[in-house]
Length: 321
Image (cartoon, rainbow, N blue to C red; front, side, top):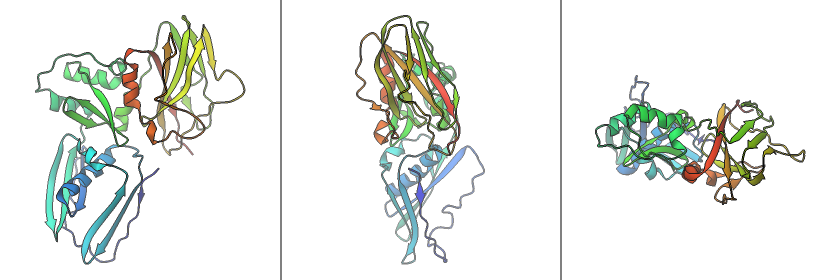
């Protein structure tokens, strides 16, 4: 769902501090968020939440904000299914203005939106770090390779999900990933014993997608779709392969590319090979409906792949209609 903002603006001035929503900021690498509440702690969380929303391209939640004046006081009501207490895990947050005005707290927070590799260096370089084994999937992603090179150490990073947003975590360091950062967790993985070919690499809305798989070994093939926002869908589960497999393999159905957004996106298709059938019941099967909010399982998939044989292929999908 898209964000819905309902504003009711009176013709007279809000009874609020002059600086609220008026702090000048010429630094493009800094984001300012504002929060207001009768409770100071809650006002701080609203300010951080506003920053987090600015950082993430598409927040899959239903939010309604109304602003109105009651008894000459400024009130802000936020109705949302986000548990904002979990969004406070942003490094480099600084509260630059806090003021109590007519029994209401007004807060401005600032976040340094630095490149993720710079944030990692700033927060981890002074610690005693030792090389550690990295996840089988993550270690080959452009993002983790960049961090390894930047820091000079291979750390056991994790990708975690909080309220449909993705974070990079190591020890007590945690930082939100932008959409570009998240795309850098996609990559094209090959295997000398298996060939995984898509009919195209770039798609328009409604075009058909198909797969050709060649294997030197017999076993079972599964295909998993990773959407641009980290939703996981199971396209094909434990299909036997001897030497070659086409999917779809008949004319009874087609696979059409969908992009319900008004901007271009990237997705990744992952081919999983196993000698025996494996349990994939944790992942939702793709059908004619869009994947629901219980499908944000990219973090679980990463851990699942740690001891598996897999190939990956990135596709680009143009702006939807």
